[in-house]
View 1 (spheres, one colour):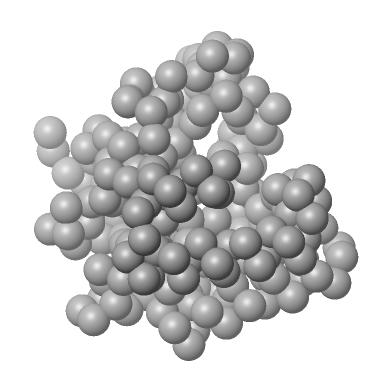
View 2 (cartoon, rainbow, N blue to C red):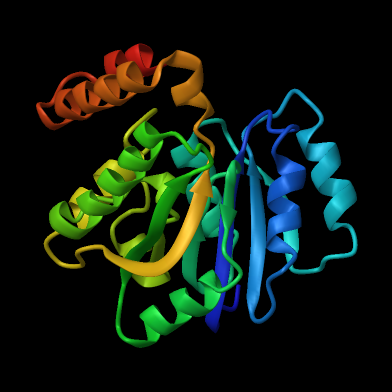
Length: 232
């Protein structure tokens, strides 16, 4: 497989996303330039794959691959199927600004090997604005990025690191930890808007607190399967 220089591979793990998949495809259609989109299916049981197949049939730079379930596995397999020298991992419930690929390319051309975008939520509530602010603050001051911030990474760096660790949760957190010393994450000036539905559904303050508890448990070396069970 020939790797393309100055080419961005957008990798999106999907699992039962029939309510979101059309929105992200609509969002990506505004992009121009040298890029591909890889949807990595973890065994969808709804209409996600049918919708993708129908929407991308006339888009040669879009493709759908099959993967074993698990976001880390799906992203790793998407990376293996990609041809870009820059990998951009995006969540299915995200919406990106039209300039994000240009901002990523400019960062890579400056020598950035690992980065992310700025985050905001689709809720207008003050708590969700604070949550978005704190997420961006964490990137700047702690050099930790999470997947909903749109992680991008230079291909060689990703594979030299072994990709995402095959764990049921915190694979994005662990990647930031792995990169922190040699390639601390840099944040580009472009926003990703993500869904706040999990906060709305489970209670905003409760969800924020629970996420901090789970992250501390992970840092303290608690069993990852126990953490994943608590998260679910």
